[in-house]
Image 1: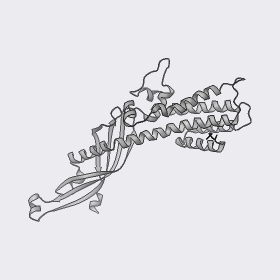
Image 2: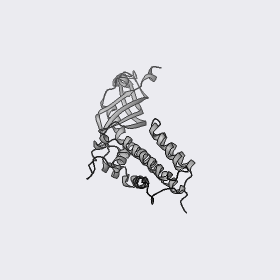
Image 3: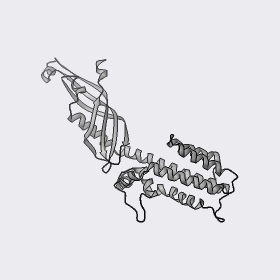
Image 4: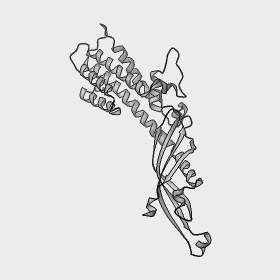
Length: 285
């Protein structure tokens, strides 16, 4: 089945999706609108002008999302021969995986960065060729223009989707480590919020209700956790319990926790970074 070239309204909708990724980026919106207006105009070199706008747009996205200093600080970064800084591929890599080690991304998360980046990089090459106005390079075919703009937008949106996929994959792969890190802190540390509830409070277990990941910088991943801790509240000594002078009750309370992992070892939670706070207010109501 032949590929159907999208109409301008469909292409504009994709532009809106891209702009929504950066709602405060007025330059992006301006360039997008300029590309759409000239691309759909009667200007005899509209395709070349549109390609120039889209080339600047892709460059703007790559540089703003992957600044030189951030990319060059990553452990996987290497200066490519005959270049002075990050390549387009390296910028795409940073947008998708940040400073995460390549082995972790490829072997644990199962993401193929070359496959993800290839369509966008090829489209950028086409944009570069189309910006030059020569007698033999005038681009005035409406379908070709629409296809070129659509491919550029698809390539950029795919990079954002891949970044979300990477974040979700890290989220999934760290769940067990996050669970164990919180449990270790709950068991090994006397938490005032639990200790004050009974003569002897012991932790039976916990469950994670939700947690989020923030790539703080090029060195650490920060995790914020919300969950429920299950406890046993013992009132009186063991002998009091045996003599029916005490009591043992089960209860549960919400907790929040934060922790960090080094980007170079994303599956190793730094135990000394784990902080847990239990909300025991329901006990006193």
